[in-house]
Image (cartoon, rainbow, N blue to C red; front, side):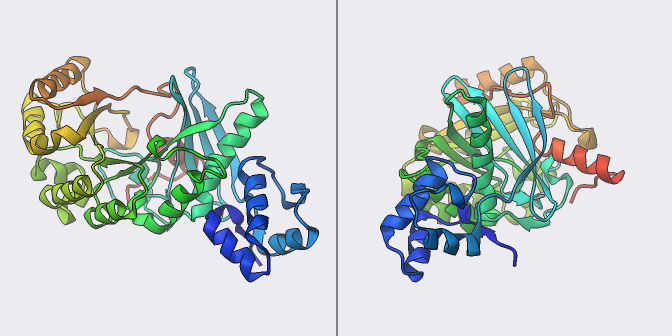
Length: 360
């Protein structure tokens, strides 16, 4: 029998599961502490948990299901991990070093079906969702690596922006957030967690209703339906008007600021007219929105796109600022390794199969 990872249980779920087996909440508190504070690699290391409880846990759960396949380290300290799942699939996880702490970018799906025409993540179609445990374990694997380095460093921030569409794996993504922000365990503050979506409007509303109090980022990337549909096929199903209505619902419900992500593609969406259109689109929500301008990481398979010139980035930024729009330019990490999300995974799969990767 294939055992599932115990990392997939929220604390409340662990309490309920152990209660069904006849154990008190105090036992769940012990197990949780061993998993996330002491960070043991096996149930046998939980020395103050009774043997019968450990035997029960071992009969139904394992702890680790991911194995490190490849690791790349950038000169700036960024680390990109390629993990192999128990079924042989590969996923990417990235550790980034900032002045404010250590941030990990996690993956939520094996492949992606959103089909953004500039993105390396969508080069391989989605084959399945990741379980909550597989998302949690990405954080744990990175933390184990930091522990092994002996520098007393801890993951302090999380961005759910890796391979896949997080809101297309909504339930598992929410359980993941509940695990990592639990104050009895990893205790990563809600304000230090950001979830990014390409714009699944119904899920944006559900996310607003969930009261998780984490940050939301929207991958906008174009100010008009015609342009956004050309580079993001999801806009055919969920046009900008529908997306903006969901964003307005989120802002009214939560009163939390959002980030609008805008990747700059040379001579595609980086002109002054695009900046003015964007400013007009979001003028009514500008008090609660920040535009994050993202320099493009070129991908061989998407050779029709090039990185915007530095002067174009500055002009776009200045135009937004003059229109009263809060904006910033994303600080780049890992530019000397496979920087684009999904690029390392795509390269490894091509090398192992000898096949050309085709967008899904």
